[in-house]
Image 1 (cartoon, chains in turn red, blue):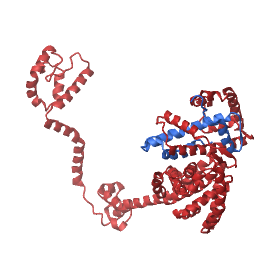
Image 2: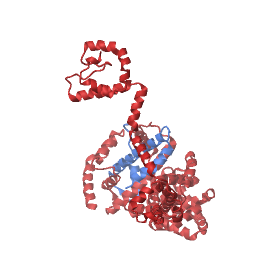
Image 3: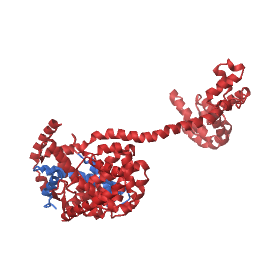
Image 4: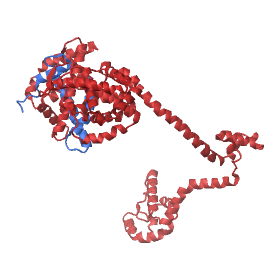
Length: 517
Length: 77
């Protein structure tokens, strides 16, 4: 009925695609006839039995094909389950059937071959044993390898499983074992060679005189790093938790080292630097936390050597708590002889220690007395509020906390966080800025001296900012000044730095830089 | 606020002078402080991120300490 309304060319295709469901179409057509009829009455050309649109006779071949595919899909949806499943199965099974039939064919011809005679005797790999089989069989001595493959199809899977896995495991273990040990050493060296050029020699943890206190931190950091490299992560992580929880660790101590730690970590452990950076910090917190003196005087001591020793002393005094400290030092000195050469003064100390061995501690105790006395002097002098002593022995005031706090709050607000900063965080920030200025002063001083000046110039600062990647062709110092200086609440301050003069100086600085470098 | 100084210029000069053992030219301290502000911004931003990751609200000493090393390394000349 409705089917009659279908165009002639569409009908056979549809039937072909849904050959099986055709049985049921009678029912369906009964149900759907009225609607389709009604619709068919309206649009006699466009509707099929199920009320589907059928390609109009005027449709292009592509359109007709599209209609056909749509129809077949719908038909598939409407086909009863059993039929649909069967059809799907057919589509799915075809490759499997092929394999099955192949297997059946092969099963007749293939015969299981007893490999027991050859394989245990050979005890070697597949190819050798296969040749052994050939030798055993008088017929196949002349036979080509292809014959072997045909005959031994069944054999092959077995043998490799017996012999190969074992060998492979051995191979793997052989490969891996040397790899790790080698990798650590090699990468240390390569990392060193890569990292070395980045900093001037004088700036390396040992050689750099910048932070007197840092020296000790370097000392301990390398220690820790070495230890961690030798023993693994364990040392780093357990103390961490405790340390973090405890709020009382000294600001000066644990913060002093991180930068150095990072460097040391990169150089010493290579790939492990990822966690290495963190571990040492934590360890430092450990080691330093105990020393209450550090808190009192986070300042720098005039003499570098003394500083290092003093800090050592502090460590030593606290030693009872960390009895394992001495062994750590020994380990480090043993394994990192190569590194010691690079690290300069600190390393000398370490060498001494290594040479001394057990006596080191006693020596240090004696040293400790002297040093504690000196430190006491320093502390008394530095206890005056806000007065610190640089490594050059010059007293200097610290930045007023109010200023730092205001800055920090502003930036915190700018970065989306709440402007609230806890007092603890404030002390940490103060400490960080303290270190920052120390680092900055040394860098600037080095630049100025390199340029043969006794005065730190704007050009030095610009060079520094360039090296810090704060200034680049896209961001000029002016843009930065415009963005930050005025924005910092203070219009008058923006006026205070005379912009034009700075401009001139900047140009001059650029020229100098080019000439200098 | 408006009357407030952004920072004590003399203090900054003294600090840098003490650390570098060099004199600081007349206006270099402005740039120095600009750099310091960049440092602070970096530090505070990183600390805020760190704090957020650590599930703390607001910047804490822990977060600051954790990012100090990186910030200092970033601003090493």
